Every structure is written in structure tokens, then in C-alpha cells.
Amino acid sequence: MPLTLKRTRKWTDRYALFVLSALLPIVLGVFIIVWQASRSLESEASDTAKEAVRQFDLMLDNAKLAADVVSPLAGQPCEQVELDLREQVTRRPFVRSVNLVWNNQIYCTSLFGNFKEPVNAADYNNGVLWLMPGNAVTPDQPLLVYRREQDQAGAIVSLYGLHLINVLSLINPYTQMMFQVGNNSIDRYAVVRNTPPAPYPVASVSVSSAQYPYRVMAGFSEGTLWRFIKARYLGLLALFVFLGLNS
Image (cartoon, rainbow, N blue to C red; front, top):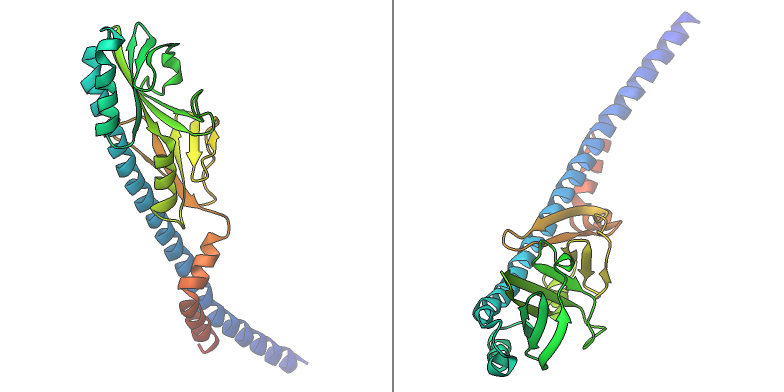
């Protein structure tokens, strides 16, 4: 009986050692593959978000240039300056409309000429940017609005939301992105939400603009990691399994 127990114990120990030696390369390989795939997706999301920020900054640079040009005209009669506003719309890419402000009230626009509408600085993130789902003219078309103010004078420049959507959609169709201004955000489907967006389930990153008060969130949907591994690392995973079973 003792000899039988001793032989059984030796066989069990050898079997356990065999299983461990087989599993170790497989477990280690899976860990390495998951880590590398996660890093690759994070890098892709980060690069995509940075490129989106670069393009959004370019759009806002045009809005800022238009505002810088027309702001000194604020306070002058609308009839004398409305052509100058329209000139900026035709000269600046991405710009939809240019408006003059005096004493927190829009009084002259490139679209309508004389116009009256109060301006609420609290609507603008850091007093500069406002992401709108639409306005009275185009209620179903999102707008990004840039505001410049100095003392009583100011200018408000709106950008087409379609340009935002194009950037979110076309830079990398495999990466999901959102453009966020304050609590408002917009995705590639032109849906504007007024609550802060949740991080993406996979490889979520956030890149803020160094020039304007907004950020871009990027990432991937649930299950992307394993689909990515299946597409890119299936052969390597099979190699680790082979090495484990033949060790």
C-alpha cells in the first residue's frame, strides 16, 4: 500500500508539473497579447484625437480671425458695417455667420443685418465657446459658436456643425469620438447632449485643446479588444498555445 501511494503521488506531481509547464507559456502569451493590443488601441485613439484637435483648432482659428477683424467695428451703425461682416463669412473657411455685440446684445449680423438678441455669457464655456444643437434659423443643425468680448464691444462667430461631424466621422472610421465643450458634446451622428459623456469602454482617451476650451474624447466600443486580437494576433496566440502543449 505505501508503495502504491508513493507511485500515485509521483504520477500526480509529474502531471501537475506538466500542466503548469504547458499553461505557463499560454497564460504569459495571452497576457502579452492583451497588453500589446490594449497599447495599440490606446495609441490609435490618442493619435486620432490629437488629429481631431488639430483640425478643430484650425476651424476655431478662422473664427478667431474673423472676430478679431470685426470687433473694432462694434458700436458702429449696422448699415455701415454689415458688408464687412459678410466679407468675413466669404473669406473665412468653416464660418457660417458673424455678429456684432454691444452691451451684451447682438445688434448686427451677417445673415439679417439689423438684429436684436441678448447674449448670456454663462452659455459659453470659459466665456468663449458654446456648442448648440441648433438655433432659430437652423433648429436641426448643430453650431459651434465662438465669442470675443472687450469692454462693451464684442463679436460672435458661428461655425457649421457639419464640419465638426465630418472630422469626427472621417479621420478614423474605426475610432469613436466626441467633441466636448463644457457639459455639451456632439458625436459623429450629430447628436448633441447636455450631460458630460462617459468614457468609452475600451482604450478611452481625452485630449484637450491648448488654445480653446474644449476637448476630444476617443475610444472604442465593447468587444473591440478581442476583435482586434482576433484580427491581428490570432497567429501569435496559436503559436503560444503550440509552444505550451509541446513544452
